[in-house]
Length: 569
Image (tube, rainbow, N blue to C red; front, top):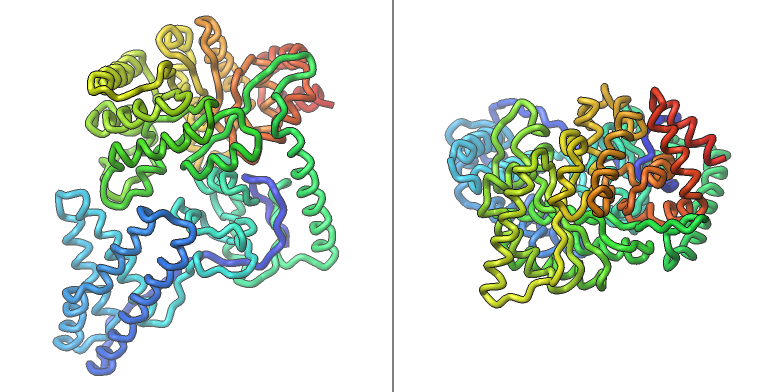
């Protein structure tokens, strides 16, 4: 059986299916023998504690101490005599089955935590759910998937993968993944490119048709999944896989080459990262800088509170030092929308993507923002730092954010702290309003970085995570290209540089158009850099400029795609 999806991270994998699906429990109230249920409960608690300890031990190879703290919290709860005694009392007093008593006690504890005003205690409700769900599974004999226990080559099949799921993946055994939902800009797709493992997303009913242990071919070049392939198909794709790996190896000759066109125009190819450990991928793939450091992952990986100034400083310093004088663009906290924190509850909103998030949150919670700015400014002494503010809509927002930066910089200098001589302060262009007014923003910003993932969804009024309107994710729509040109021309009108850190920058059909529009810096997943460099080095800037000008006059994205393909022949 062949399923079509979206190739989110290039490559080919052939391995068994590991179906990542949580068991569905149906808990009903039953009369039961008290002694038997109490014995069953003791056994289930012991197994739950042993399971969590084993998972923590296996995860320790890939996770930091901070990331492992979630397992400590779960162990503390599983060892809590108060929770256990409440379940025991219900079994003794009401003569009910252990799994029903566990559910009733869990519901009561969750309700109690969720009703508290303190964000920390509200978040403990999620820990209660996790631990008691595992306990109930152990009571009824249901198996919870454990990604850290995978010890053979597999392709993971799931509805979607969360950042915490991907943090547990061991690349030695996880050869790729296929998800039912998602697009090229979903978090699971971005994480796959960071990990450099093949991924096909948006595969529809894959969970219904793929079974645990089935043989699966993942074609993340053409966006296809073949379940239980024939011997001939396995042979064909084994050859394709070898050829893909050979081409990938051949690209390594370009690691130390410049990204320069045949007529001598040079651009910069940089990498997008989510943590200091991602720098390895940028350097080994010949990245000329970091075009986007997504700092929200530092915050999302914390369990109980916002990361401290010192914790952030160490992370930023490490990246700057390892990039050894190459440009590092660090985006300030871009949280909210679909990116949540365990220890902070955002207000319920009808449309959180258009609500209280990113710079709007930071300008409201200046205490949190100032901590990050101080950490960044302190780290600036160790490399070439560029700071950019996300989701800027008005000049007033940019001025307010920059004023806080200037205040904290002055404070640190007054404290005798060494800071970098030249810190560039720029902004993301991801709201149509800022693209249209780019010539005015460029008078005050040192640079722009175009965030096409959001720019496209806001321009087309189409949620990029919605399957039903995914056809409107059109990076090469002439309207999007005109907004991109406004941003580039606006920056150049004031002698400023303009980069792009959205997924469009690494798109092989978009890159020639962006080159023609005058983009200075292309920032993408590290695994895309060498392929993009090979393409740039084969193109003529003059010819691409002529082609890009024609692209701006087309009527539809299909027209632009045809124009680009004909120009590249």
